[in-house]
Amino acid sequence: MQIILLTKGQRKTLRFSVGRVHLLTVLVSGLLLGLANYFIPLSGAEPLPSLANNNAQQELVVQRAEIQRLRNKTQHTLDGMALRIGQMQAQLTRLNAVGEHLAKKAKLNSSEFNFDQLPAIGSAEWKPLADSFSQGQLLGEIEQLDLKLSLREKQLELLTVFTADRKLLKEVRPAGLPVEKGWLSSYYGYRADPFSGKKAFHHGVDIAGKSGTAVLAAASGLVTIASKKSGYGFLIEVDHGGSYVTRYGHNKEMLVKVGDLVKQGEVIAKMGSTGRSTGPHVHFEVLRNGKKVNPRKYLYSAR
Image 1 (tube, rainbow, N blue to C red):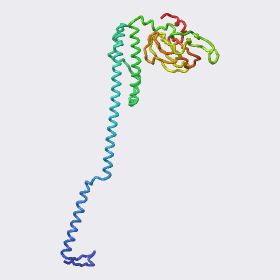
Image 2: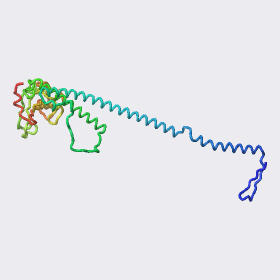
Image 3: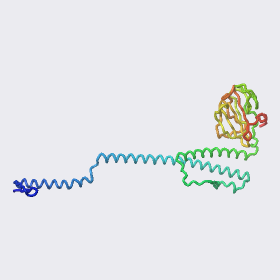
Image 4: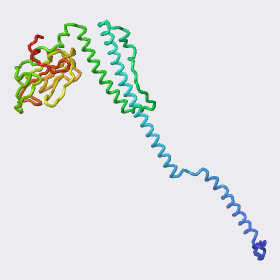
């Protein structure tokens, strides 16, 4: 078979002969090439998994794991907050019961002291774009509220004890020596400072004794300080209500902590020489209505 090809403008002709077998081969090859060009793009629409796909899947797995971790952390935080709120609700229930009991005993107006209703509160300012509490701030507020509830609960317990038996009202007034054994070594008022020798005012009395001697509560009350204070050494402060507060300084060891209820004559510490001290003794102060007064008259009062 002869094949004639015409060039552009039909100026030249090319003639060559092709056998039937060769022609058939060329036609089949062209057909296969065309089919290949047709089907290969279609198969490319759904490529086989590649390295990029594997990386994307691994990243998706990591993201899902991180989301689950955050969910678990959030749930753990919520569980903790729910537990604390439950404890605070129990404390509030007890406080309401104590408050209602005191209101009845004092014959207070029930409408003014209704513990089933929230107290009326408000604000003079309105801020529509106020910031919300963060999780950390909210947890901090819960902690502070929990501490306040605990202290108020113990204060109400103390008040209940005092109002239940009027004889105990005498115990809120300091009376007697605040030590098991000892003697007055320094009085209230101006004196020569034991360290500088200069004139200085002494706001309490010093009662000397043997190191480790028992220090006693001069009256019943609530411990409000039990820590180391500059000058005082290990200091204990007791609020007795009824305008009285007593302090016991330079202790060797403290046997009570903040929030404890103590009875008159109870051992609260051991005599020592901590802080600004020249030897074992107790620095004893009495405050009435927030002002330091001479403790001498209380030391010799009968309990």
